[in-house]
Length: 203
Image (tube, rainbow, N blue to C red; front, side, top):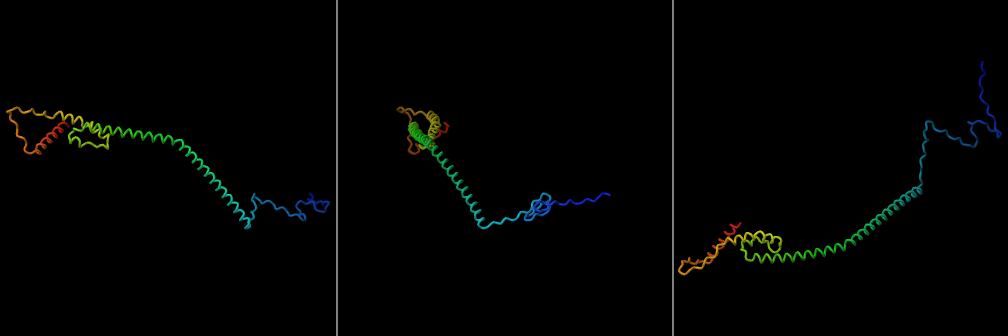
């Protein structure tokens, strides 16, 4: 029969301790064994003192103040840069603007002079026109309209003038002459009606 196995007997060390890895050593705390399955031991809760909490709050506030100051400085720098760019642009454009204002003032003066000249020409050309044609005159405040009115009505007035009957020949002695109109207003009304008829035919 085989002999039974016997447990190894630990050999004593020179200082009297037993050479046994699993045996506790006096004055030495045993190292806790690692948890099974890779789990971490629960962390102990952290407690802060009021002084520590105040110090943390002061650090956060100081950081926020520094970030705000840096942002304000960047904004002021950007504003100054833009202001400098605008001032430079204004300095460059100001002479051009003044030159344009001078040019516009000169053009307005030339326009007014030309309008006055055109008005005088139209007044001279239409001085003998009948009142019916002058009713369409837009007036001196509209020089372009007056020129258009003059160019439109001039052929009509010219055509109406050509269709006017010739002046009657002087009466010969002994010839019959119609009696003069007893009422001057009636004669003027007849002449105006005849002139209006001529203009209607010219149109």
